[in-house]
Picture (cartoon, rainbow, N blue to C red):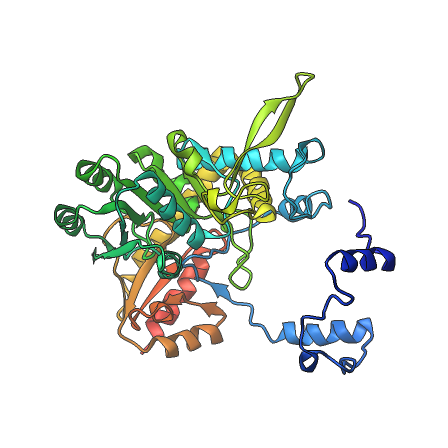
Length: 445
């Protein structure tokens, strides 16, 4: 990788002359400009390291049962090592295939893996996150079904995703109807009633698994929507695609757009990001898909090569002709996911999903035997579920943290019920960790 070479003074002068300015910052009012040097005290490298170590030592190292959209999985060291190679550490678009074959092949492999995992025909090169992936999926559905202007979205979709969708659609003339839940899953009868009373719906979006952990009944939902209008699009939104190592993927049910967030594939939770949106669809809709698609081909010598095959919004496409404002992809996060999935392999992927499910079921069984806590899910779940308590959750959480455990994500964080929380079990959790949490639940008052 070449080092960054700054412009010379002469080159800067020529550029400023070209735009008719003597000073690049002339448009900034004089009163807003910094007159003096920033008053920052100089520190040695050791002093800086000591300062940040003290800050880091203030963090609590807890066994975490948090999930609700961002997940803590074990990440093999090879993911960090390979993704940190300098050849990959650039966000620049691989426009020149002759010098970008490594990046292009990584994207192609990611697309292939995501298509296989979701049993869909095509995947794009990734999106910013699960929320924007859902918003773009709805806009994509609108381009496919042009004459209708209403989308029905299940309240089982992640609340943050729903907020982003509302922001996206606010000024586009698209109406949103929120589908009610029954037992924390989309109300099938309510969906039927809505479709019988409204002839303006172009898409129905559901969480799969949904925000509350329930595996939605796509076997019924998809036929109901298609009976209403064969052109209407069913969209699934997934926060934890590892689930598809165990449950049937969206493509098995005839879903036409399956999107979500793949942060759980080789990317750390961090402080809520960075994330990795994905969007998959069928070949008949590929030209309405946002983002970009890498294709596999052969060069003039007959050797395998990779190129940008489709792109919905790039510098060479007029804005008014673009199908999306997404003109990039989460390249490095996508790379980490690709390495992670390659290391797991198909059998490893299934075994990991099974382990997550087993730990979750073990926890559910134990919790239901406690006095003050109850699992609310009556439908199948994957690795997270909803718990209700009749004790003060904040006091219970404080007690857990004092004992080295973070018990889960409170629904009040999303403007929902204060007495309920989502508890998640991934492979980084052990049965001993669960037993310790159960002991604390038994002590709660």
